[in-house]
Length: 275
Ligand code: C2E
Ligand code: CA
Ligand code: CA
Ligand code: CA
Image (cartoon, rainbow, N blue to C red; front, side, top):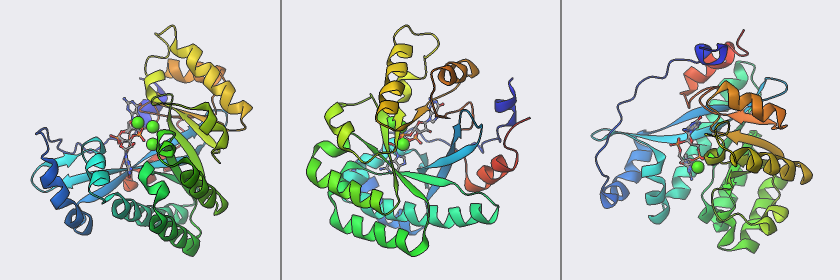
C-alpha cells in the first residue's frame, strides 16, 4: 500500500440502504429531514499536484434516513430538484459549510469549500439573493461547482447570475466536464476559474487508449482559457503520475481521500502531507 492510502482516515461504515426509493415519499419527507438534522455533509479534499497542498475541498450531501439508512445524493437530488426543494437544501448546505469552515479556520486551515449547485438555481433570483447575503455577512471562501448543462436552459440568465457570484468572490468551477453535452461556446462565456474533468475519463486513464488523449487535450484547452484543471476520480498512483506529467493542476479521488465527515477531515488535515 502506498503512503497516501495508508494515511487515509478510516471511513465510518454507514449502513447503506438498498431498497428502491419511492420518490413521492422522499419528496414528502425531505423538508422535515432538512430541519431534523437528517442531512449531513462529507468533505472530499482536492490536492495541488505540484505543491502537494490541500487547496480546497468539496462538500457532498448525504441523507441519514431514520428507517431507510444512508441515502446518497444520486437518489435524492433529482427528487429535490423536481419538488422545488433544492434551493432549501442548498441554502442549508451553505450554512453548514460556513459553520464548518470556521472550525477549519480555528485549526489554522484556510480552504475554499466548493458546493454543488443545480442548474435550476442559476435562474432563481431568490436563491441568488439569499446566497449573496449569506456570503457577504461572513466573508467565507466559497466555490460553486456547476455543470455546463446547467447553463443551457436559460443561458443569458445563468451566465449573468454566475457573473454576480464571481463578482462576490465565489470561485466558479465547471463540474463533470466532458460527461454531458459540452459546448465550447458556453465554456468561453462562463466566468469560471476551474475545470473539473469528469471521472469517466480518469478512472481508466492508465489502461485506456483514448482517455489519456482526451484528458491531455482538455488540460491544454483549459490552460489556454486560463483555467486551472482538476481531475476527479483519481484512484491510483499511476493515474496521479500520468496526470502530473500532463500538467494537471489538482486531483481529487479515493487515492487522496474518500468523502469524510468534518471531524475525519480535520484529522486528515493534521496528518497531511503523508510522510
Ligand atoms: P459529483 O459532483 O461529480 O461528485 C463526485 C462523486 O464521485 C461523489 O459521489 C464522490 O463520492 C465520487 N467520487 C469521488 N472520488 C471518487 C473516486 O476516486 N472514484 C470513484 N469511483 N468515485 C469518486 P456522491 O457523493 O455520491 O455524489 C454524487 C453527485 O451528487 C455529485 O457528483 C453531485 O453532482 C451531486 N451532489 C452531491 N451533493 C450535492 C449537493 O449538495 N447539491 C447538489 N445539487 N448536488 C449534489
Ligand atoms: Ca461536484
Ligand atoms: Ca464531478
Ligand atoms: Ca458527477
